[in-house]
Length: 572
View (cartoon, helix red, strand yellow):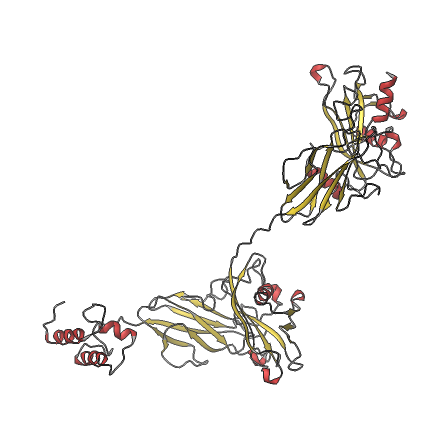
């Protein structure tokens, strides 16, 4: 049994958590266990039904280490932490753990161990923190063997320097792993930041070491531990060496084997657009003839927005779509667009912006999809000013909350719009189903918001966007508020102003009433006759009602049928 003692003494322990340990544990090891080693003590070879006093995993935990720690002391600490016995540690040779002793499983049985999955070539006490052979993150595995180690991965009868298997915390190999194939592509999710690599040698008498982008077996400490999270980027190469001649071993081999795994990232999923915002970028105050590098409208387009979009990112996207430059977006303050910079016109010149025609009271980055301040249908305007905004509708000295005007997509007001008059009737064509409103404040430091039938300034989201289609019926009321005290503002105002527009839908046209005088008479037949001989024109609506017999065209038959209708002899 001297051979067995010598054999187990040379081999006893230090290993790492084997591939069966969960990735979450190894990640924690790398991130949280800076002054610890992982200790496993188990018996997977001699079962209780065959006579063992215990089987399975007895200990599996992180153990604190300090400058005086050794591989052996770490094992003892792990056992003591759980109240388990051991025999022999003081002599650097463990013969019994919690009642399970050498020879209990046969004449070839006893305790052996690995350090980072390698059967050490010295006793456990030889591996110390002091000399650098035991380090934080190392894995120690003490195992019961019934075959001098052959049943737990170690063999003196072969010199295979190959991998038996390899596991990655995530990713898929280009083909099933084989010991004979040394080059692979590892495809990982697009958002991968780190990988934990868990290689297992065919013969654990040979060491396995992992490297990133450069295989440096002669540089101790350049490898990554089995518990380490390895930072990776697309195109990186992970090298795993087995049994290199530079490393200590229980066996002898002419040369080691090196495996390479090229890391390829999956394409990032195309984010789902949550809507669009309109972005306009213009310079209407500093003409090219006065020295501007450009003037007029540079950009006017709808831009997709996503979950992470902001007002500033939408502006940048619109510029990038046309390869226009900008400076300052990353600092939430744009100073230059396509060569036109703040200060080019005068000391009062620069870039200012509105959201839905309102000069925001926070930086552009504050308005985001995630916080609900940037939404589908919003309008962003970035404008050059040469008067600190006063030439583009912003005035800090004016507290007037009035509309300059309001544009409707259809209809006619009962009187000319006057900012001091707040109630109007809007008459729209008989076939109007919806309309949009584009209100413009005298002072765009105040917000304008549009409502249907109920003015609810305290309910965010109850308003309609600029240019948003509003379904209307006869008698509906459109309210447009300016500078309500419930809304954010660049200026202070004691109270807002509310404008009221009552919808009146015109009566549908009468077929045959070509002149729209409310009556079918000889004048309507005459208009048709003049149209036929090119003496007058008909509008689209007139053409529709002039087709009296509804045959799809306007001709002499329609004029004749109207005359018959007037004398009571027309038959449909």
